[in-house]
Length: 529
Image (cartoon, rainbow, N blue to C red; front, side, top):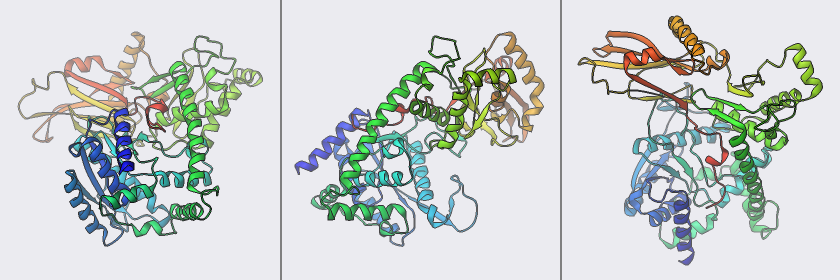
């Protein structure tokens, strides 16, 4: 009993430290002992009224539907609202998260696809019910498996540091659904990560909480299940002395977490002093001089002087620019690193200046890096898109927001709530890439806008950067779109609002990255506060 109270107290303190104790939280409850214990613990720690539970039924086992209903009955006993999300699979078709049916992947990718869809559904529920975080039942055994799995993949320090207690929720920053909600991005929290599964079994047994064992968890065709059996056998047979025992793996994981903490801290410091984020243009500029207050670019900048920190800074920059849910490959980062180091080599620098090669951008992982000029330092942006590469967002209502290119959040609204419009008239907006054929019809207005910005000494990115920025147009329609009152008119282009158009339409445009910071510390913690 004392141990169980200690777990509840720990979770309460953790959620208080994360400023989530008074927020509405989503509990991911599968029916296993760990997630059932999670529901009991969190409901006792912060109250059942702040909890909303979801069971994602993958439909892989015939008994899973009934188990999900049984989970719902227990949630009702705890006073927690419960919802079941039933996944449906199809043998043929295309893989897309916004489709109701999911394409059944090959066995080796089944776990990955199921996990992606599960988090997509959880994120959708968070947006719908305005929930601040998703809590999962990941425990110490899961952490040991993750460490070993990433060790075998040669993941490096960041991968082998394992799962953080808090991280960004997958699909919280990107969505295949163009209409985005204004609710803050939910986070993912693993409050039981430091407790063993046996402790959670004991809690369920003592509280007479029924749980279900998923037979797929012992299917050795899946790599994680193989590693789980290996860890369990070494932990039981060797008394914890085997390097594959859970305690040994967690000890190594903790060491990697300390390294990650230190690196994150240094990366945060360098980004604060050496990086300029343009959240509306989706660009990052890193200083070219040796120090932030020095313009001499013949020496490596302070952020690039250490190879380990340089790699992580570039990884954060690339991840932020591309809004990827996974870190970039080491091979891609090395392309940027090689260019930067060679640039500051005296012999390479002179050769580059003489041959005018220093102006050529380097592109990898969907990101282009532009060498320093007299106007900017190392500039990073999304690579120039091909015509039609970025899916247009069309006919969203004024007053709504949309995610464009899975990285920019575009919000369009009216200052007077469209009160001056005739009855039955609707204002809609669309967003296209500058290089798309659809945007060519407004090119004369965009060129006039470009000349105005230059005359007004407004900041203009290179054309290749402008090509990855949206052209936002607005139009007025009637009778459900059957009648056009005002044809599409550009109101935002080249990273700036078109002033004359905004005054005429009384409409405001706001464009920003879906991730408002590249700071790694803003998205994860590895230890409880």
